[in-house]
Image (tube, rainbow, N blue to C red; front, side, top):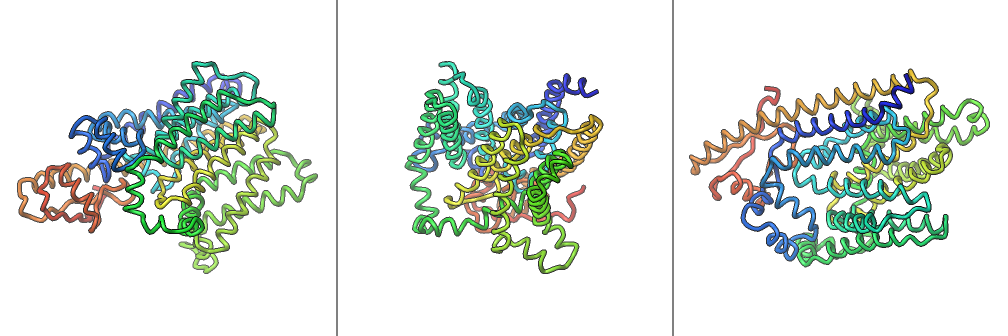
Length: 505
């Protein structure tokens, strides 16, 4: 049975990738344009997208790849219906190629579980939002790049000239997509250059070319006149803060989007590390009692802190409320120490040198992705996408080093993971069916108010925790204006978004 599963693992990977594509295709089709999508759709239809892109670079943003995506894709939702599922299917495959070294069924199903347990806000802002996809694109490009680079970083072989040019173009485009992705791509390449030099005393000119592409992309993005003007206009007060004041202002968001919102991620990381410890065997644990104790306590502590919010809703204990507070010094201190515990556990538990180095590398990349956001005036859930997905790679690398004692356990875990994923996927699909139902109601309402511009337009809200930016709150002039223009409503019409009594119809 075990041989059969190993032999058929590539086919299972393809099967899962197709399932990911089809599932994302279904929920993407059910999701309407929302928020910033309306503005980009309008701008994309007005004229030549390349000329608009130049104008945006001068007056709005240096994210050339992201802005081009918005201008081309937002007006053509059919294109997003295809590209969004293709991106996530590709990401799923890339993570497996990078980290599922045993090519196991269980590894594939573990990544599915992780993909379907992201926080509600991260799902809303990246999985089913056209302009949120601009965060997904650099993630896909970075994973693809590291997959290519991994083939040469641990050996004396170098990239061919054609591959070197292709990857340098890839890093250029990835770096012109999103600031924190760009910064971490540069850091990642520098780490690889440093590792090869200290390990084999080689200077890797192929990686230096890749680094040049990433730095050029970063500079092109950061030197945008529009980006500078927009930051000074919208975040002038933030610009006047010192470095430490900026970091202090974003610390709450850092702990929220790194730890508090990712409880399932922490649970699974703790589960995999504890499994790695248990499978070391009784003899090893007895010989390393202190090490084993530290790992057990640290992972159990992580589970406690991650589940504090859920426990606080069941048990009325003041201490649990304190564990939920991301501004608490206890909470902040614990999570900072926990990061050190995870590094320690990786060094101790992961026996395979290559897997250990890769897991440490991606752990650094994950943490760094959120750390650079401490220097940003805006830190939202979508900004933590790179942290979350790089942690997926770390978890799968650790799991690849674990040798399950019985094939029946492998089959059991795979079955449990697939069932859990199916249940989670079903709940999301029901939510997006409700979104589609409400969107049809909205379109009927909008049609009525087009014909009655003198009335206040009452527009139904989408179900809670479903689509980011689909409803507009009072005072948000820009999105009210773009909503009216996109749907052909009178510019002077007053719009009121109301809640339905039930979203289960």
